[in-house]
Image (cartoon, rainbow, N blue to C red; front, side):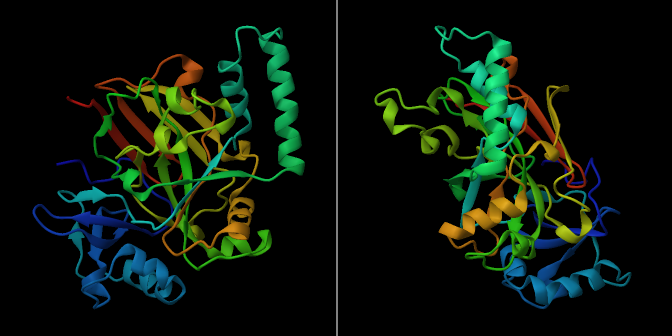
Amino acid sequence: MKPAVPSEPFAGPFALGTLSAPGQEPFPALVVRAGRVLDLRTELGEPALTVRGVLERWDELLPRLRESADAPDAAWHPLDGLRVHAPVEPRQIFQSGANYRQHVIDLEVAHRSPDDPRTVEEARAEIAAVMDRRAAEDLPYVFIGLPSAITGPYDDVVLPSWARQPDWELELAAVISRPAHRVSVEEALDHVAGYTIANDLTDRATVFRRDMKAIGTDWLRSKNAPGFTPLGPWIVPAESLADPGDLRVTLKLNGETMQDESTKDMLFGVARLVSHISRSAQLLPGDLVLTGSPAGNGMHWGRLLRDGDVMDGTITGLGAQRTHCVAERS
């Protein structure tokens, strides 16, 4: 049984999660910081309700969630002893790449050709100039992830036997409420119900195709193994966060801080990402928009994930996740 009581508080009076008692089906839960939960199926009188169902009716149900969080005589249960699952099952996952200025600079320097005549300082300066131009003039870089890669915030992460350079990427994830298609930047945040934590694991050895370099990146192979996206623990309503563009993203590996950066370093903020994605695709309630990973990945440190590693991830106001890495057994 994984620990359920949050080790790091979330912002605001309540959050949403998906929980289960031993031997029972998962249920949509309203969680308050006192370590108590409400089964929303019972509270709202809808036995088949899921968190995604709540998000599909977000504008209607949000006032009722606020009322329930303040109801002392509601059917509260202790959070302790319950299993915490990924908070939502999305239909679509949109992932932003190369969206943190320092992260991109670090990766570009780490992947430099041995024949590159530039010094490290020269390379960093040139890449920084490119990043500044991107933020001012270009569009976000977004690709698609698989829902089957999602796992819970305290579940073990199995490192596939073929993954030679598995790496961590802690990220802020926006959770969609209203369907969004061709929305403006100004309208975009009206379609975001809240935020959660995602760790978008990547096998660096398989990011780039070696058989035909012109094909480019292979995100299917490098990012979508089962369990490669620990998610949660909670969805914190957007109204509880003052500014998603000013949150601290921190990942510790075996207790040592590896990532510690503000979302201020994003090239494209949440509103620009949602608007950009909606120009091509339709975002649906419960969908995730992963906003990219800050500096401090394993490639930067020269230390990739191994059997027995423990990752602790926190983002300001969103709680914390802890995952153990386990090598795949043949």
